[in-house]
Image (cartoon, rainbow, N blue to C red; front, side):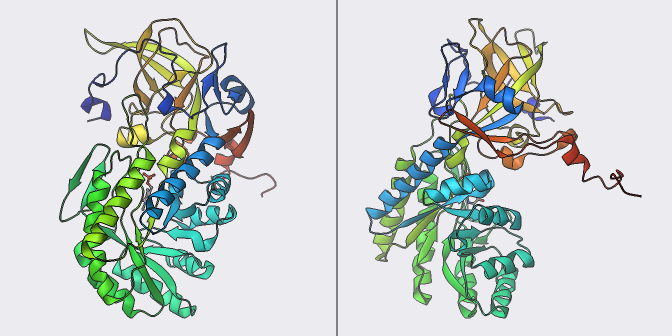
Amino acid sequence: MSASDVRPAVPEWLHAPADANELVAAIWPPAAARTADGVLTVGGVLATDLAEQFGTPLYVLDQDAVVAQARRVREAFDAATARHGTTARVYYAGKAFLSTEVVRWVTGEGLAVDVATGGELAVALAGGADPARIGLHGNNKSRLELARAVELGVGSVIVDSLVEIDRLAEIAAARGAVQPVLVRVNSGVHAETHDFLATAHEDQKFGFALTDAERVVARIRELPSLRFLGMHCHIGSQIFGTAGFAESASRLVEVHARLLAGGEVPLMNLGGGFGIAYTSVDDPTDIEELADGIVDAVARECGARGIPLPALAFEPGRSIVGRAGVTIYEVGTTKPVRVSDELERLYVSVDGGMSDNARPALYGASYSARVASRTSEAAPTLARVVGRHCESGDIVVDAEYLPGDVTPGDLLAVPATGAYCFSLASNYNYVPRPPVVAVSNGEARVIVRGETIDDLLTRDAGIPTEGAE
Ligand SMILES: *Cc1c(COP(=O)(O)O)cnc(C)c1O
């Protein structure tokens, strides 16, 4: 069964808008607008100029939006923790979108950086991140990655298995180092957008069962080359509301209190997962409300047990960069398709697709879209924006109302593509990955260069290189 078989033909929440040119504020970068001529501008730069100068498809990242959001999130957690006499460290979860520029922007706002591989670590370092303010994640970090982390003095390694604990202890001991670690645990709380599910057992690859935490921490405390900092828990992604976080935090505090009997536990890391709006139906919780709700829950649970509040850490990714990104495509073909007696939809093919945005194909993720190069008075029509790849599941926007006269040559902009699009991009069908352009104050500059066909061919060992025998 393909993804489209299980979806309703039109999502229940989607309604024909009065104006299919409108930029629904929460989905777009805060400063996105249209000129008097109707052209979309991001960071003060015309979409038409961006397309002309850099080509399409194009990832556009509003620098000021990333910087402002990084600051807002840090301030929200600073304020929430200060009220309870403790502190928060906010790690930017680099897997959402990592480049040296973005590392500079977020570290400039006082954020630390989370990485999950040697490659992400290399980018964070190249962007000037302080190793002492880097967290290294992953359920299967290589010996080389662990050794590099120890050698650099990475501030925390989040350990994920007993095998890894012994491996890391040995590596640190051999270097005469003491490596600070957090223990990843599963609180049994899974949260997804509006709901959360709480279970006692989990069937997934990350972390330790909360019930094993005491035994695992006891093991770490026996190892002189490791220093136990606290527990780490990440309950999911694209979460709205505080209930799931609060439930998870309360389960963690209970174990945290028991761990205090065996030594100090200075830290608790509650992960990321704060949701953003992708379509007009999404109504994410303000970060200030989330921060207060989560920190209050931890404080309440600690208070009830008469234990001090630890320093807290958080790891937002999507909520820092998601809304700052817009992808610009050019429409290549349009085709009305009769879906049933009652329903016809316009298929709008663009020059990118699942290679630059895998999320619809991977998770059935919803997006929205607008014609970027002009406005139109034409009546809104139900459309599906699809890519150019050889998969019927190559969908960019499953369902959206676009002006009925959308036509080849129009530019189409898909908002909220700052997170998990560039980072999940592929070369499927030998399509070169698009460049990333940062916009700010009417200026645009490339922060990650686009690939060329030549870039792709250089990896093929069967192609004779010039000058070779
Ligand atoms: C992916 C991830 C994050 C970031 O999640 P967002 O939904 O982007 O905020 C944080 N922590 C861990 C451990 C993760 O795996």
